[in-house]
Length: 325
Ligand code: ACO
Image (cartoon, rainbow, N blue to C red; front, side, top):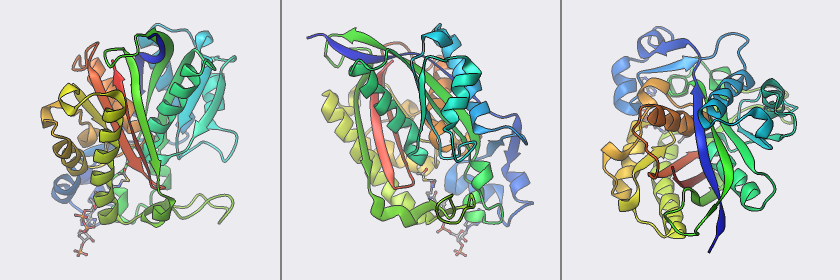
């Protein structure tokens, strides 16, 4: 049976130039390279330059994704930017990206599910494409978390970094089997009772300030491993595949122990997991498309490979997507 699939035509990413190492951080707060590496796997992260905004990062990643896909900006009719760190309270940063790219015919909006944002945006774009409401979509994850960190809180400021990643999706016809290229299944979840585990203590409607990120790390950790394995299993069931079919897990890059713990629960060998957390830290909504782009550029991910993307973040919100490259 012929069905519409959202096929990924290309991807791209962008990282700011400035590298912030663990050693440098240890001169800012009471921490050490050893502690950060042992607990998180992070060695360094990138920090956006003064005046460099989320939409700037997103635009660079989107331009690279379009070039990789061989698609012109004028062909794009949908832009979804997943971010929790927009340039302004309004309008959506996606509108700036649209203007920067010259994709004037595209509808453009932001989607906010924090670290799970890219997976949520991917699922949203898939719904647009399969429903015939768009043909070519740019899905971007971009963040400048350095701007919402309390640089005196060693429990959080060592974890995050800035960056952007993007993919180009196009509606194409598939056979309706698990062998089709494109998005085979998605699964999204939210539990708003867990807001206190991870949130920003400011906003336009509450404090009229931007606020800083606050987190109960151990509780987030436990919730993450269980929920990520669950959502992955749900997506696999929907698509009719098993963990043996997965060529690569492309996970949210929060912490190497969460990444490895989830893969272990799913019975996927560590060699089949894309990990960039050591060099990027946690870039929130940007982490999955950043990791994807690096693995594609390195030649690790090949056409026909089945990819499992999974992510969790504030809300708490979490989800997964199965995509055949
Ligand atoms: N350097 C040195 N010591 C530190 C640091 C630091 N940067 N941060 C905390 N500590 C101390 C604590 O103060 C505590 O000291 P105490 O025992 O004297 O009180 C000790 O280290 C242990 O603290 P814990 O919070 O118990 O450390 P834990 O092993 O849980 O590691 C961490 C903390 C890394 C935050 C971990 O809980 C974690 O990774 N959680 C997941 C959070 C996450 O990934 N969030 C990202 C957003 S959500 C997402 O993307 C999934």
